Image (tube, rainbow, N blue to C red; front, side, top):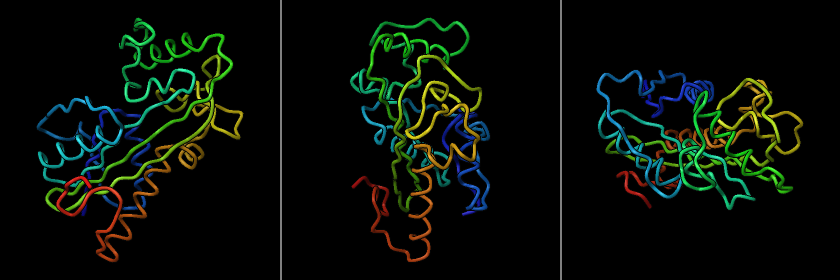
Length: 221
């Protein structure tokens, strides 16, 4: 395996994946690097189902190993929303739609803070489900969580998405105020990818397919 496709066009997410996958020492491509373009709608009800759909669709189309992720923010006081709708929270009916004045990330944050205004319970967690799929061979998946709470105002200019309003447990800084290396150690995505790398190392060193996720034919267990 000399190259792998990370199924995203999100530059912030791609940057983090490239940092996290650097131990593999292989070329990391994004969807922007592919000449033929296809769209995969994230229309499933769980993070795992969305990640599996993307991994298999892109892997079978491009015929190269793929890493696909679905991730999001779950807020306790909002019954788990935005959840799988995290990237498009501003545009769904739950809590009313939010106008996009600057960009979608800002609109998502504005809506989140509006819905949490006056609420004492601001507990939340980031969730990441990562799927590795090698066409016509096998697939595996892992998950990672980062627990914390939502601030009342955005802080920091690093990261992306909801990072400016999320403070991890045990920290006083938001995700957007942390250095990338520090964030990757504690983030949901960092934890999921590290688990994935360990599973891949085990698989390639022992050729043991008895791993969480998919069997060697790519069928979901």
